[in-house]
Image (cartoon, rainbow, N blue to C red; front, side, top):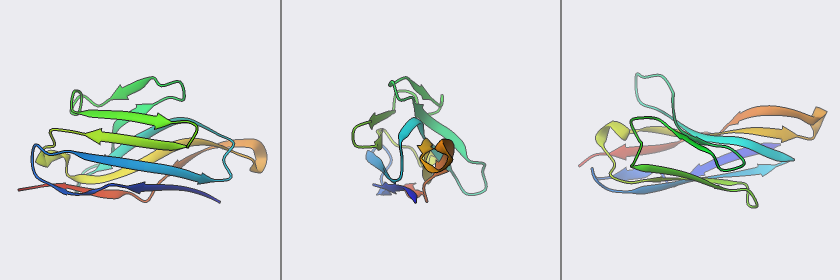
Length: 121
């Protein structure tokens, strides 16, 4: 059994900050690329940022300079520091990871349940 559990979402005013966290647990041998996606009402899910096991990062143009992704490989955690938030950042944010599991010794792509971020005055 594998879990990705997000936390840290909530309501914040424009210009404010939030920090999202994602904890991976269960039968996991290794985690490769981890990422945050988001989905706003009526829109497709989109990549916000990703980070490889070695620490290489990639950001959507819309969040560059405002959002920082990081991970702790020892603790199997992923974080997203979001600053200067805008109403258009309102969405459900999902944690995603490539996981090596012992069953069949195979890689799977796994999603968390999501956490709501609302930016509004």
